Length: 169
Image 1 (cartoon, rainbow, N blue to C red):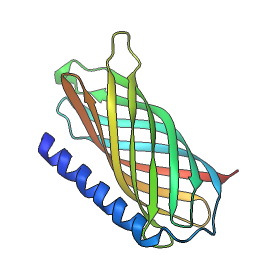
Image 2 (cartoon, rainbow, N blue to C red; image 1 turned 180 degrees about the vertical axis):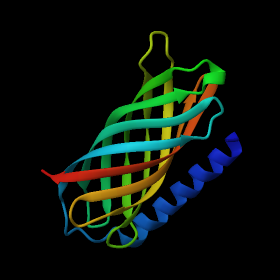
Image 3 (cartoon, helix red, strand yellow; image 1 turned 135 degrees about the horizontal axis):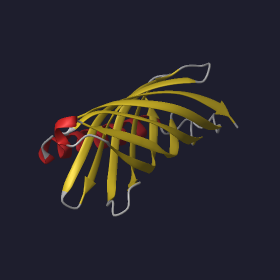
């Protein structure tokens, strides 16, 4: 994916988050804290990789009825195609962000953070992940996001589906 396309997607997500937050920031009837356990499956947008699979833990703190803060950490395994040498690349993503509900259950999210490679000599990546999702009343959360990882000298990207269950703390 070209850097200009990534920049435009990031800017659009930031503008949407800004306007959504300003439009609904007055409501303060919910202050819940949740711990979500999720499974991620992704399709790489970078040549040389066939699929991405992973899991995460996400702490979500409601600031109002429509704005929540996020902290997440997990593990992603990037499978390398055979014609590029095979094997895999492991990454531990650690991110912080926000979730803005546009309607009662539909949300936009945005996260920034760092990705730590699990192999010796791996570079740390800057991560950014705009997304959209739906949170069910029973704790189930389904989201779709683009996640970009920018290294000095390279980048990785994926479109990922996250299926999670949130426990109220």
